[in-house]
Length: 383
Image (cartoon, rainbow, N blue to C red; front, side, top):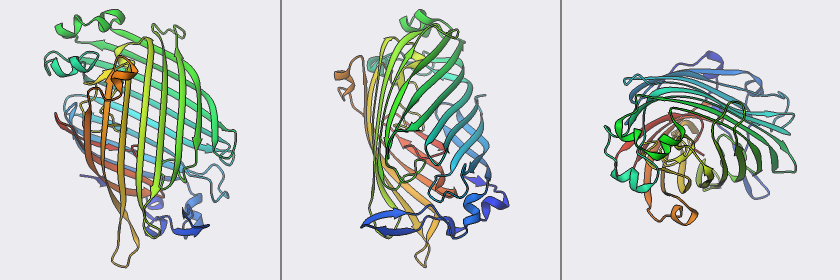
């Protein structure tokens, strides 16, 4: 399903760009160097054109490119910064423009992550809570149109060997239209109306020992963020959000690239939260396979276990191709006890990987849930 067109500078990264395995103090280490040091120092651009499908926006075409670079070319252990940028158009008229920055500065003493996204599409709203998600008729009682703009910025300074901290900024604007009669009676919609603007500031603290943040083979990651959304910068909502994200990466082989990855995430929202800001399953980065927007509430938890493997050539060298499969469970609720699997939502899936730049994969995932399945194309890994 994937058609990749690459510039010569990016295509020059052959299987030699695959990180080499080495032993260091009996701990598996994957070097970020290639056999050609000049490749690591280049500014790389890989354009692509990809078809896809999901139940939400049906058949899609995504075009764009992934940029990567080093902010300190002579620093051999500094991860490459990556900036994917995509444009998506679907047969339902949906348009999505997105760019997600993961950058490393001053020899990794500063990390700046940012998200800039615009969406205009036919969306779904089943209501708040598990009961509404199950009982609301689809699609007649759920459909509406949503125009959405989001800007997020997270600069993180290194405090110790693996500790980072910094402020967070989150601004998003939602314009809702073509409201169906069932949705017009919903209390959460009636409270906030057709224009919903959220402006949040807060703080984040991270522990990060991953060998490569965009595609970890080993290490541990723990992030805790707390943000306050108030009526500033033109916002019309006021609530608070706590988000805790933990990830573990275990190498399964001393000679081949095989990883078992674990992800547990919790998000709790307090106050008068609009439904557009509530956590919901079904994005490319959580329980892939659910219809995004169907299951949403103020509290949610989920856990995922994912096996990641790289295919090898006949002479036992790593190729650019790989695959994954995963399983997960999630739950939503009005409080913490409800959101700890009072009504369990199972999930499973398989995925294809292609390394287009050193340690940077394009991924195609097929996620399954009890109600339907979805296909996702994205950068980078889900977690």
